[in-house]
Image 1 (tube, rainbow, N blue to C red):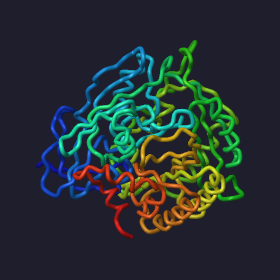
Image 2 (image 1 turned 60 degrees about the vertical axis):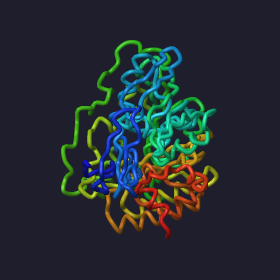
Image 3 (image 1 turned 60 degrees about the horizontal axis):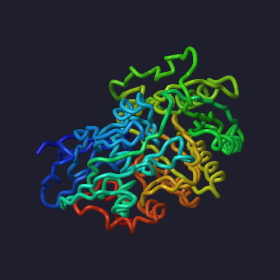
Image 4 (image 1 turned 90 degrees about the horizontal axis):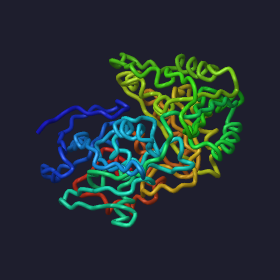
Length: 444
């Protein structure tokens, strides 16, 4: 059988896998060697090991890339699970429709978006991707095919949305899109001097703006602008732009790529401090308005192909948590102070409020509260000590970590953060497993 070295986006693990391919949504579940597990594999954009199955089989899904139906009047689209959001948007945006929820990259598959129940900058109004999935088919290792919707096998719908590919193979899905007038957004960027200002701006912005997110400078210590940053808020234009539009705003770096991983990480103390200072001061005015194409607003990093290589051959970790609203302000301040004191910092520190819309999945990550995402070059034991401190703060604040971004979460933190995990276990397909699941279920 074909084999290959596979890594996730964080480049932390490069492991040999047996590779199979599902060539058609009508194909039978593949025959597997005895006592060998399988995991569906989309485009490998999970950061940690939730998309890996070291010692087992990966079932490659990208061949399932066909569109099945598209109602341009209602915005309902059906497609196979291997279709990328990029491919879906190429069809739907010219017809006046957009994905209702999108993560920070358009190079994820529809099946992966469901399995990880991805979220975006509009969670406070739209919830997660799974909130807009009308129906899908789940292929089990027994050969059974389950049609899942809010009214048909709803318990399987809840287990599979956010279920990390463990309940079976999603072969196709039907999604409700969002109407748009065109590809442009009205965007405001506001500077804020600290966390208190951030929460005040969010309270104002979330009422009137569909998309809100903040970049923060995580190199600042308490008393010197802890949590200062730039908040972006945006709405889709209700009609096409009038007059001249700067086409350069459409992902100016789209043709750039990082051709190879440098021998050492380019993300280090001096570059972190310089970048964070520059990025915060690059906007002189306290408020700036602009029209932006959806590619540059939603997917700025997609313009630099293989940007993950900048972290060097040892790869990088992303630490994304959400903490409960009642403890959010204090917990985020403590987390940022801890990171600043460690001197390790992050280029891409993102802060956002999750809203009230409930995620449909048993293991979905978003909950109402405050979410913080941080990237760290792999520095071994030094970083592990920082993560242990952050884990304690997250657990004390009633929070949890995002499995799609995780590569080292202790099982105890997963089980406390996802109290429905016992309810989820009976839905796991007996032939499905992943490196992530074995790790967080291992006895400690």
